[in-house]
Length: 389
Ligand SMILES: C[S@@+](CC[C@H](N)C(=O)[O-])C[C@H]1O[C@@H](n2cnc3c(N)ncnc32)[C@H](O)[C@@H]1O
Ligand code: SF4
Image (cartoon, rainbow, N blue to C red; front, side):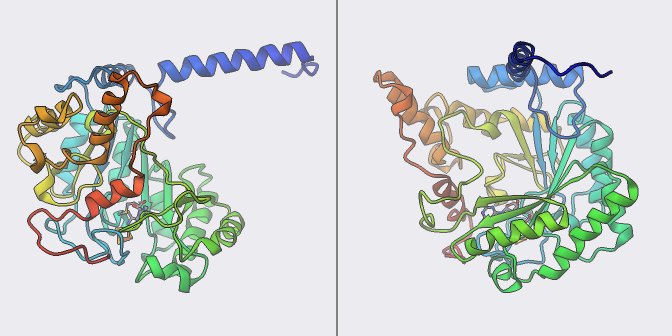
């Protein structure tokens, strides 16, 4: 139905109303993950998790809102600031077994909002990844992969991926020329990645599909910032989205305070992972967060038990207890969360507030690059310095 254009006061009241609506929605509804179907179960679980995190509870009644699930830890590239790319081995290289995936979906699928199919490997090297995406999407879960896309693909494979229900595909492509691109994505083929992006754009057109959103993700480093604008232009010509974020490096942050930002910051908060995001590796190992790599730092495994049992085991409850005070930890420094910058920031923030200082004056004292380095320099049970430094 059409009508006369709104006059100034009605336009204003509409805007205000929609702003109020938005504010109300953001306090009541979960974040609008693309492709997520909101059900009563998901909404109730969302509020339960949010409440328990706000109270710092250690035994959780709900299920994670977001799940990171490693489709495979195999990768054919050698990115220097990735454990896998740097040649580290944390656990057997394998594909997530389908029966295990199915069992996890049966337990968690009705509650989770969003599922990431990658952690420390290349998800498209698992031939079952499109099928896993299809199963999760059919349950109303928002699905995403980050892929280097330097893999063989044809029209049929592109169509399978497009029709899987995948909501978002991030293509990790950190350069606009082969010479620059391969400095980080060692072993990658820029032409192949661009060809594959084109195949995906065309497959979407052929199938009349609005999904997946295709986004060229550019990690910016000292060696490639000069090509960001060219890459942005190439992405627009291809018809895909573009996002440039600062890349982590081993050692000191490059160009601290410069134009490019990390996608996450270090504001004090109770660790998102420990309360809201489950991380399950290809072998069923459950990690405290996606920054840990080694099996020794896993908190448990879902090979023989349910996720819920691991989620509330000693290691997880100990980690959550550290957000009341690290001295309460029964595992102490051997626990990977004990000296994680986020745990320390939270503790320092509590002292800061207890001394009567205003929240706005708090300085976390760590950057996201410090957080990356804490994990990247950690080698439990593996002697030797990080190979990439
Ligand atoms: C380890 S990768 C695995 C997924 C896939 N192989 C890929 O590279 O996209 C997980 C995520 O880390 C990102 N990543 C890799 N190196 C990075 C760096 N130095 N700084 C920031 N993010 C990085 C990847 O782009 C990806 O989004
Ligand atoms: S492409 Fe991804 S998994 Fe492979 S080495 Fe690079 S960051 Fe690691």
